[in-house]
Length: 273
Figure (cartoon, helix red, strand yellow):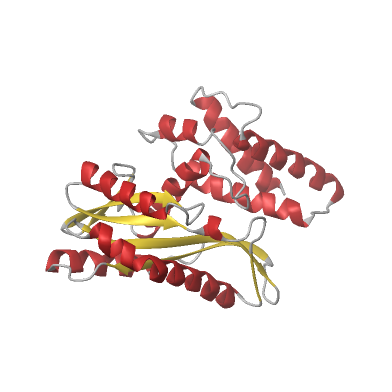
């Protein structure tokens, strides 16, 4: 558990280096303190409970995103946003902190697939592809109620801040049952389940996407499912996993079709959180 304590300390040190004081009641403070306490106690007892493993996996996601902010021009902006609200991924209440973390995770994942391909820029993330740019608006979905308003706001955000092509990325993990990850016999089984959830989400809302994207330069919608998986047969038993699936708008011009083709190649490589 020394790695867990190291991650918690690195996050705390990053905030101290930037002169940002973490509120004692913030979700991030709770996560850091819980990880430090767990690292200390497990070093003494050698025992780790299931809940402690889940805490470690939550911290892993936050740590991966935050460490990329070191030296970044927008680090203060995002570090402050992640102090606001709950960071527990199995809770389903709306959280500004988790909204911002989703933007960082999309940015991180795209850069891992193609170094330097993505920037933290309007609308939320700007993806640099060969010969074209694609703006990405990132939206966490906490409920299907008023989803049309979320789509409409994303379209307005892209139109106002992105002169080129755009896509909307939707995080759908908060539509899963509260307090639960995904159980499966194998990693492939878990990946298939998450891909199926992405497919069902996109299929259910495709008519709405066509309606709101029509007449714009928005070429598609991206469903992102990220959660903790509990694997019954293979090891490790618990881990973070994410799956991405892209829906493309009909009747795209050649430039937009090329963008979608590049996106599919990148997204097809997304395997884990």
